[in-house]
Length: 586
Image 1 (cartoon, rainbow, N blue to C red):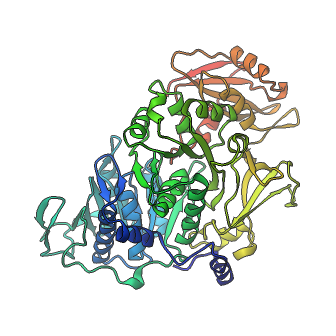
Image 2 (spheres, helix red, strand yellow):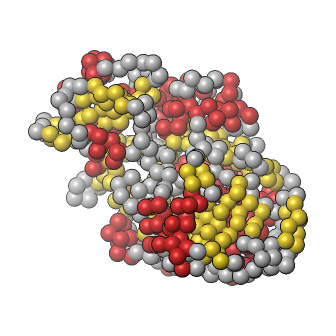
Image 3 (cartoon, rainbow, N blue to C red):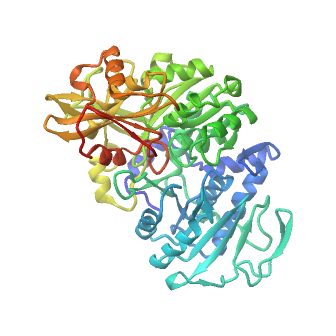
C-alpha cells in the first residue's frame, strides 16, 4: 500500500544514503534459514523452532492466508500474546501482502470493534481464551457488529489455528474449502480437512497442494505493510502505518548499540510487537542471528526463571517490568548470571532505580525512546558511560534528527528545556490512510516534516537526549512549573518504594501534585514519611505533594508498558481534605 507520508523524494534519499534497503524482515528470516537451517531460532513456553522450521511456518501461514482469498492490502488484526505465532504470523502477512495490525492483549470489545470497523478488517486472529477471559465470545460479538469481517482465526496454542468463515450477523458457515481434500502430516498428526473449517497447524514445509504466494504479493520494504495502534490510554487507539524499511533500520541500530551477535540469546519479557520488544527482539535479533526467547505473560518470578533457564544475555522490557524484577522477593543475582544488557523503553527510568538495577544484576541498562504513533527516535549504547545511559535515552538513531524547541517552535541551545521534535529514516509513514491527521502531527509531508512529540526534554552538548515527561503533565503550583517525573524519581529513590506516579489534582492553587506509591509488601509509608523523605532529597516546598495514595499495584496501559495515568487522574480528582493517606487495594 502506498504510504501516506513518504514522498518519492524521501524514499529515494533514504535508499541512496543506505539507511533504507530493499530487504524486508521476511528476507532476513529466509536468508538465515537457507544458511543455517538447523540452528535454533525462536522459543516460547511450548515450542522451539529451528531457522528452517520458522521459515517453513512463515511460508505455510502465508500460503494458508492466500488460500482463504484474503486480498493484497486487506487488513487482518491479530490479538496474539508472546507466542512464536506472534512473530511468524506477522511475517506471513508481509509475505502474503496482507496488512497486519498486532492488537494489544488488554483490549476488549470497545477497542477491538473500533479498530476492526475503522480499518475495515477482514479477519481477527487470537486465542480462544487468555488470562481467564473468553476472547472467542468477544470476537463473535464483534463479528456480528462489523460487516467487513469474513473470518475468525482462533488459536489453539502450540502452533495451531482454525479459520471460521462468517456471514452477516457473525453466523458460522462452512468454509469454501480452500484446502479441501488436502491430506498431510502436520504436528505429528494426520488429518483431512474436507467439510471442516480450514485449519492450520505448525509445519516445517508449506502444505501440500497449496501454492506459495506469488512474489508480486509480498510488500516492498518502502510500502505500508502493517499498522500499529497506540495503547488507547487517553481514548480510542490511534492507528498508524508501519513499513519494513524503518523497522529494519531500527533493528540494525539497536543491534549495533547493544552489540548483539549470533552468540546472544535475546528475551522478550514484554510484548514483542511494540516498545522495546520490536527493537531488540523482532527487528534486531534476526539481523544478527541471535536466538529469540519469548515470555507469554509478564510475571517477575517467571521472567527471572526464564532468563536463568535459557541463558538470556539481552532482555527487553519496560521500566515497570525491570523495577518489578529487581525488587521482587524472587530476585536472585545468580538467575541473571549471563545477562549483560537490559533494553528498556516506556516511562523514563529514575536514576536511583537504574543504579540499583545495575549494581544488583551486573548488567548495563540501555534505554530507547519513541512514540507508538510516530516511530523510533533515540537509543543509548552499552558503550556509553553510566551517566549517559542512566540519565538520558542516548543519541538520535542513525538517520534521525532531533530538536528542542520553545513554545514558538524556535530551536533551543543545549541544556535548555523545551518540547522534543523528531524526524528521520526510523519514523513511521503516518496515520493510517489519514493525510489530514498526518499533516497535523508532522506539519508537512516528506523530508521537511517534524513530529511534535508533546514531550519535555533537554539535549546536552554531545547530543544525548533527556526526557523529563509529557508537556501536558507539567503542573503549575504557586505560578511555578513542576515536573511530575522529578517527584517520581525522588520517591523511587526510596529503597522500599516499588513504583510511583504523580498526578495533578485541580484546586485553588492550580494542579497540586498527588503522589501515588506502591510500597514493598509489609512496608508502611505515611504522608508524614513522604514529606520527610522528599525534603531529605532536597525537593522544594512548592513541589511537595498535597496528598498521598498508597496502592497495592497500579493500573497499566493496554500494552502493559506504562502506568495508566488516565485512571489515576480520575482517582486524584476525588475530593478529600489534604494532607491525607489513603490505602487502595487493587
